[in-house]
Length: 72
Image (cartoon, one colour):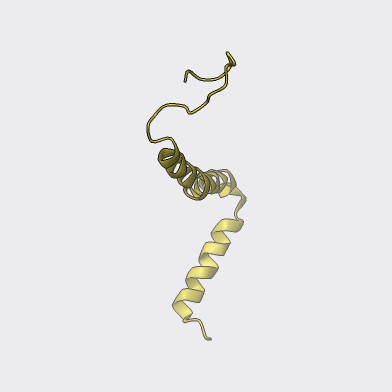
């Protein structure tokens, strides 16, 4: 599969930009934000959705008598 010359030129330009030490800190921040967004979408959002359906009533279903538990 041949890559068009315009796409190859764009890819080379982006790779040259990524190799420059000058932009390392800014690119690290962008990478951190991206990783945080991916984590939020893959882990936190599904967990929140499941917990919403499990505890829809808003009350804890704990039946123990420990003081450390949330109010029943």
